[in-house]
Image 1: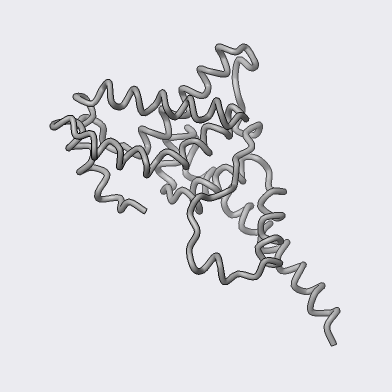
Image 2 (image 1 turned 90 degrees about the horizontal axis):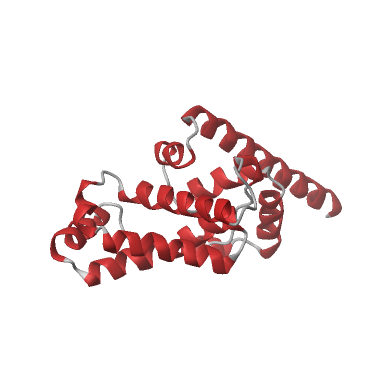
Length: 192
């Protein structure tokens, strides 16, 4: 995982020195999360990859202006969202897309030791609970918990208030906790 304080350095190196190594590092760090995010809109892995490729082509082509961007991470997500929505409009599938219609892909490309210690049964219960969340809750949960975005960044990306994010995350966490806790109570009663 690329530390957040390295992103401005990569941004500077790309902008000032046309540093292809820094560009590649930035690409490798953001590619998978952005593909998953784009897939939430276009519902096609191949199209999502094309959307993210377009985002990074635009980054490279506009690299001289890159230093003017205050928060590159938010910029990448907003660019991905905008290109995905433009794709949908070009395909005339939809003229507008509501956040409630987005179904994010919850698979994470990152695995850590803590995740490996969780029992398969508990993980299955958790994944089931997350999959049953309303689309907006699921998207916000993913952006916070998997992609590590801050509330302010998500508010900018999705054009919603921080209070909405807080409420949606609270709903998601309550439903997940309720689903896991209920499953545990049933399991405990069955054992002597």
